[in-house]
Image (cartoon, rainbow, N blue to C red):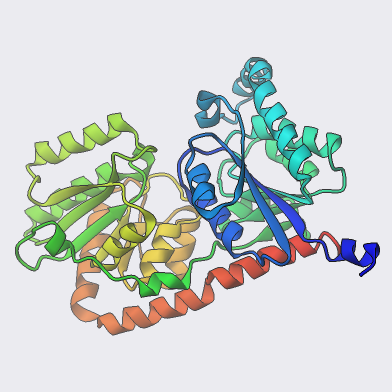
Length: 401
């Protein structure tokens, strides 16, 4: 084969860039793409924070990983939209930007990516100059993709639109912040879920928690941080128990690296103050498959977020497992529940959540489990990881179109 043909068939190199420490929606997408992109077409590397969930994942899977030497406080900081906060942020950042810029430059020099796929730009001020620098310095012909998993909007998103070849939005709610932009550069692609989720063996919470009786099991699974609204769930459970309902609630995800320990302690105290130690159980953070197995053994999954979720992967996965899902009508979570038949409540409203959980308990009594399982199979088919990866590769291939 001659050199020209060899070059034409060379695998494209994709560098995923994600600075988050914990495993969230963006990190799930990186893991899925890194393992399911066709190996005969793409070589994959990841640039992320030292000690992150992605670094551990890459080590397990043998994926090339570059450390983005980003100051931890800078990585976790959330920037407001106000001009004053923006100016102050810019003033304090230059010195802290030097190390991550140099580390990313080194990754680009070694890997020489054809495509740079950037996720979860919570620290847009940081990532914009990094990508701009690498674009100008190393590979001006590279294809830059920004995968937007956030609902926040600032003046920096206008810069992102100018810099990146394509912006992928994970939901209609995320897409709405780009309402003044149109064309192929802005695309909406729902995150995918693996069909393997249907093959998981459910863990009966009654057994592994040593519970007595046949009370329906309610599960919250996610990060233990204030905006996830677990305190609202605890108060709603207290109301339902006072009304005579028999339920047992599991809060899954405590003692995780990404938890807010002060908030976690507040939840323990809240449960104690209501005297619900026998009706509410706390479970430590579990690996993904084990967490899915707990959800598969539950009756109702509640996602009481008090702020809009950009997507709501937990809801989609729970619906795919045939569970009754109650969640807030905001952001991408609301989009999912409307499309696939979840129960909607108002964010931060205890009474609304109580009514939603009452409806869920009624569904348990009146709807056959086979009907929900059948709907779950349809969800897996419609939102499969295979279809998701295919849509993403179409975006990559549009670079050559």
